[in-house]
Length: 365
Ligand SMILES: CC(C)(COP(=O)(O)OP(=O)(O)OC[C@H]1O[C@@H](n2cnc3c(N)ncnc32)[C@H](O)[C@@H]1OP(=O)(O)O)[C@@H](O)C(=O)NCCC(=O)NCCS
Image (cartoon, rainbow, N blue to C red; front, top):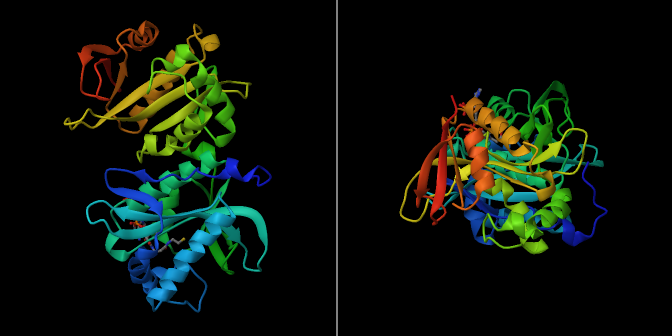
């Protein structure tokens, strides 16, 4: 269970804005009230969110009060987040995803958190809910949640489908925690979002508790010189990068930024990435990148190759047909891994990261 006994500052900033090709997740603003009213004045939405008798919003003031309630809950507890899903094609708020306190029907709060979602009916059936839920769930895990509950009326099949698509464990129909009567309950744990085992390694999601390790990794000039700004990073910069892991991984079910942890150990020895590869300006490509970074003392043991092989399998299982690796032309250790994986050398290319990089490609199946 997440802890609240840490300094407040440590708990803040784990739900940064994220923009995908289809939508942005951002905090609610006061001027979102008309869209909140449009959603919460509809019985066909509210009947799935609440206990009867259902209260439909009728005025903009009521919608503003709802937004105030979101802001209050977030400022009282930074492990919670209520995020507007803003469609990029229209710029309009189409729904909400949230990590919130799970308050039981009898008013007790057992320190549990729930994951929730709702959309305006016009926006349903287009994959917004599952994609946005995946992002906020990853943010919640990064924030340190070890368990997120998902509850719904037993006949809410679209919602159950979203929970199943996230990989949440289906607890079946049983006494509902919040509404009374029976509910269909799921629980989502970090390993449902990503957990890969190889002979010697576990690849798992990073959480805020890994900040010290990552700050150590990115303070090492010999690691930092090959990636991003190519210089050692300050702790605050690393913290921001960690909070942005979910956004970096995007919405594909297989993509992730993962900690490489030797079996039987706790401390990560490196990072393995399966993430969208940013095209250079003016180039429109849709590639997926694999990558790896190891602490110097963990190099030379074949960990990078072992982790990368597992990522290639994960990509194949997720129907990603090919993966690319791009690197500084001078990074020979990295290129040796590409060669060991059997990747094809594409030479020096300018298609990604607005840089000239040596690229390698591998068909996954
Ligand atoms: C729950 C809700 C957010 C889902 O929205 P959505 O737009 O259907 O979500 P997505 O498109 O991301 O994914 C839904 C999945 O459910 C499937 N689905 C939709 N209706 C279904 C049904 N009646 N039976 C079974 N599966 C269904 C979809 O096919 C989709 O799966 P796919 O992508 O594999 O095809 C939306 O229905 C909603 O806002 N409902 C009202 C509020 C609500 O119920 N909130 C949850 C409270 S617990």
